[in-house]
Image 1 (spheres, protein in one colour):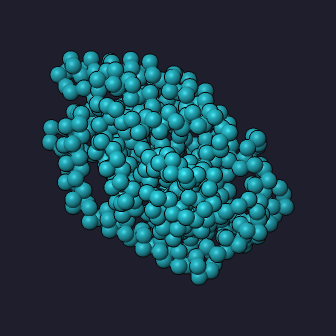
Image 2: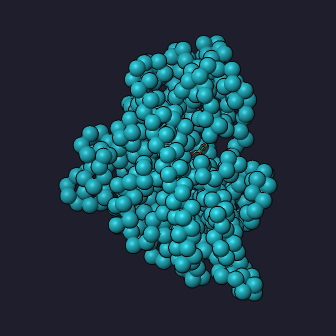
Image 3: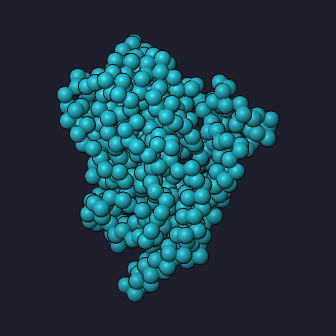
Length: 460
Ligand code: UDP
């Protein structure tokens, strides 16, 4: 399906530089390109030299010639990185957009519309200044954004959700989530609070932004999406799961994928392997890493473990496992620096996923019917864990300090016991639900996307 006459409508996409933000933005670009829009990516950092060749139909324009802040190193100065990029990218984006607008004028074409990640909150001011329409793209779940509206209200009513984070009481206005599922931000971290405040303000004061897009589905977050639609003054589009709607090629890795793990998986029995990855940002200390490793080794289950550079705080070396551990793990463990995760999760040998529960990892796992061990670190990962363990009941939360005996127990519960088997069944049902939802809506989806295309067109 192609929207008549829209092929030349230009969209400029501005992603945030992290893996979990770039992937869905490129997937969104691929989906919208297939609907007739032309796509320009205004980016800060793309490490992969193959990126541009993987997207021959996209135009890639770098905003900065040198981004010293590196990807995926669990940087301590995350808030500094956010504010630096927001101030350093403003002028280059304005210049770049001015050139695009002038070119469009010369060619008697419509000005472009900007779709941006709110981590790049400066984009709103640039779009407003140039009188260009803009659309927000949130790469986390809709419930996360809803919590920003709900939390201040319940705090006024006397609840203290940020302190009360262990309570199983349901959060008023956020059912079925509990207080323990709310994101916790360390009160002491003023810089992070300040960065978060900027982000929340950008999203809540919609201003000239014309719409919000989520990588989500009604069948996962119907209540939150409906409530958000009531709270926001602009249309909300939920288009997901994007990695399934966009062709497999439409993701890039900022770190090089080690495909040898697929050959290793090919030799394993169905549902016998637990895949372990904490995403591109979360980090652990050396003691926690050793507990993880001993827990995995003692569980006697086969595992595929992503030990990415920067995963262990304060350790440059990747050779972080002791000789004892290596002997104990033997052939049962395959360790890589970065895996082709979507392919791993779709592999029949994978029977469980120990994850930090980033939103991408969450939807990639449930789309393949893989039950999870949930170990959230920060932000929306706690909300996603609440959905996985408490609402959809396809995951076990690994709580308290990382400790080898508990890790071993949880792995065995998921991989060997009835409880895990029941979760696997529910995960298979959820996979089917997502697939059916996508299929059912595929008849209406083209029509909806066409309608959305028309709405985009009007919004632009
Ligand atoms: N990912 C990957 N290989 C890995 C680990 C992660 O390709 O070894 C991808 C994963 O498929 C997902 C993204 O990195 O699309 C991580 O995003 P998520 O939202 O789960 O977490 P974040 O990294 O943003 O914390």
